[in-house]
Image 1 (cartoon, one colour):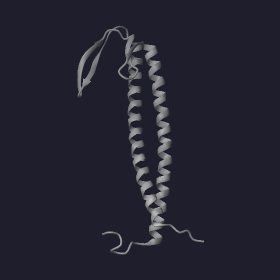
Image 2 (cartoon, rainbow, N blue to C red; image 1 turned 45 degrees about the vertical axis):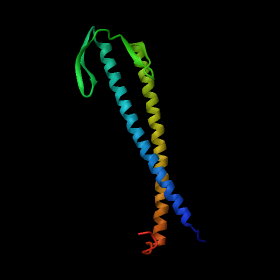
Image 3 (tube, helix red, strand yellow; image 1 turned 180 degrees about the vertical axis):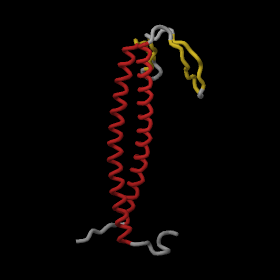
Length: 150
């Protein structure tokens, strides 16, 4: 028993492959952004832990943008202004700030897991389509000159 595959089937597979490859690239970019944000949260949590150990003022270099740092002094390491979204800031104690960051980091890690699973699923489908197209190419052989539009 043979299966007949039409030109439309091949075109649909190529179209689906194009869409899935675009989605896979977007998921890879999302994973990189999530990794970066998780790293930023880890660095912030480490700094908060160091601040909790300190007594009094803390001196350090603070980024002001464009790769420029300024020497600064944190005079009150017990109160923080936290951006909770849409540039809305609220004051939090060190412990509350740390807890809030941990919760947000956990949500980011969950999003990373979900994006990784989605990428794996799309990658499997992409490979299946590539195998399908390769098998068709193998059976059909090269297209005769003059019929491919070249």
